Image (tube, rainbow, N blue to C red; front, side, top):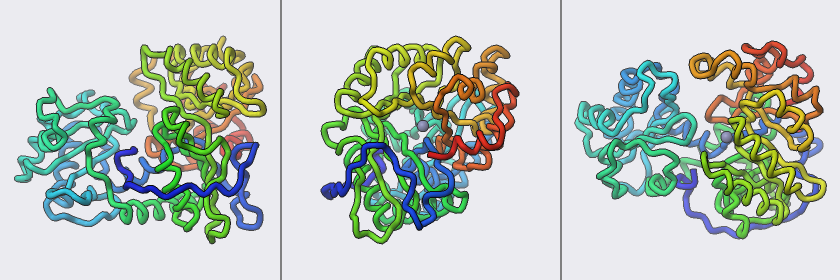
Length: 420
Ligand SMILES: [Zn+2]
C-alpha cells in the first residue's frame, strides 16, 4: 500500500530501545488490558474504508452493479471521502475511483472482472474517462479500467488484471494525508470499541515513511492502540533496529509504536530468495515473519529457520500457517517460531474452503489445538482488511472449528490467542 501514502520526510525520533519486542501496554491507561490483533494491515484497512465496498458480491453482475453506483456517487460528483464511498484522490483532473474487497472464488462466474467489464460499467454512466481500480480482497490482485491503464502508461495491457503489480499501482495518485488521517482515527476508534488495544501491522512493504507516519499517528492520538510494525527486508538499511520504540516521549497519546520483525512474502517458485532473506533478516538483528499458506512453503521455511536461527532471545514467526501436514506439527514446535493463525477465516472464507479444499486438506486447515499441544507459541490475527478485526468472531471460530472439531480450543485458550 506504499502507493497510497503521502510523501513525508520527517526524521525519526527514537526515544527508547527495548530488547524484548512489543510491550504490553502503558500501566494506568487501560492499554495493558484488551485484545492484541497479531496480524493486520492498517493502511490497507484505512484505504478499504475509503473505497467502494464490493466485499459481499456473489456474482460479477452484483460486483458491476455496485461499481456502477459507486462511480455515480463519487466519480462524477466529486463526492467526499466518507467511509464507504469511492474517495477521490487529490491532484488528478478526474478523480480516481477505488473499489475494494471482491473475491473471484466467492462469485458465481469464478473469474476476475476485466478492464472491458469495468469499461462497460463506466460507459453506462457516461464516465469512460474516469480511472477505476478494483482491488481483490487478498490485496494481491487489482483490476484497472482502460482510462486507468492509459493514465499509467499501460494502455496495451491485455485485460487489466494485475497480479502483485506494485510497480504499476505505484502510479495511482495517493490519497491526501488529511483524508487518510481522519479515516485512520475512525478506524482506530472502531477497533478500540471492539476491545483491541494493540495490533501488529504485517505489511511487507513497510519502510521508514510508513513507520514515520504511524509514529505521528500514535503520538498525536490518531491511533490509540500500541503498534508493532513489521518492515520490508528491502528497507532494512533505512529503518531503526528491531524493537526500537518510536515517537515523542512528551506526546499526549498513550499509544506507542515499536519496530517489528521483517515480513517476508515468498513468491511461488522462488523459494531460494526466501532462504536468503531469512538469513539477511537475522544477520541484521531482526526475527523473520514469513507468510506461509501452503505445505511446501512451510517446509522450506522450517528448513531455513533450522539453518539460520534468529538473533539470541528472539523468535521467528509463521504468519497464517493455513495448511500444515500432521508430520509438520512437531517440526513447527521444534523451530520455536510463534505461529499466528487467522481463525476468523473459518467464518469469512468457509464457502471458499468448502469449494477449493478436499476433506483431507480441510483436516490440515488452521490448526490450533494440535499446535498448542505440541508446545507451539500460538497467537491469532484478523488479517484486516482481508477479514474484519473482530476479536469475538476470532474467538468464536477458535472455539468451534467448523471442519476439524478436534482443532477447537476451550474459551480461555481461544482468548489467549489475542494476548501479547
Ligand atoms: Zn496479511
